[in-house]
Length: 202
Image (tube, one colour):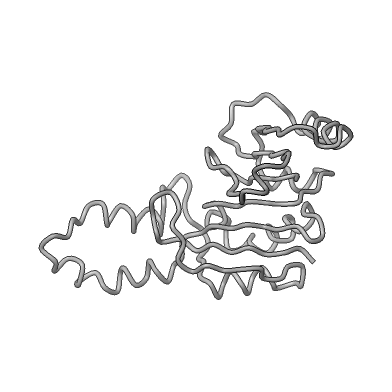
């Protein structure tokens, strides 16, 4: 299986047991990597892996802007994972980003998304008085979680809002994807404020 892990940093794709036991070529694309491999090498390498009938599992790391990579690559993937990145895509670029994802995903391929669920975060704000009234409540970690998931750091802000309804609407907008599943309360990296959706390329 050919997997593209978009801006995952140190996160790896979440695979089921069957998927973990078959040869996978996973390309991790993030500007934070030290890797010296360039896009040309990656395309040649994956083509070679396919020619060798996917004999082994390979992980490659490409330090490159994901928009530029998707705009220029000839590669297509069976699975694309986008964990805690989509909220960093500006709301003015969301539709273009989804279009680019559709151009590098095989028909029948799956895009797997994890984003903060802003309905959960909004409820935390609306119920703030109830939390702080509890004598056992610790404000600092609660505030850190809420603030980072709503805003993040000024150098890398959250720039689009995601809920179950918004995820479904945007990914179905141009008829390129259909919903496979949406889990509105998903625990990831020790936090249970996320939303996970899987969409199939049609």
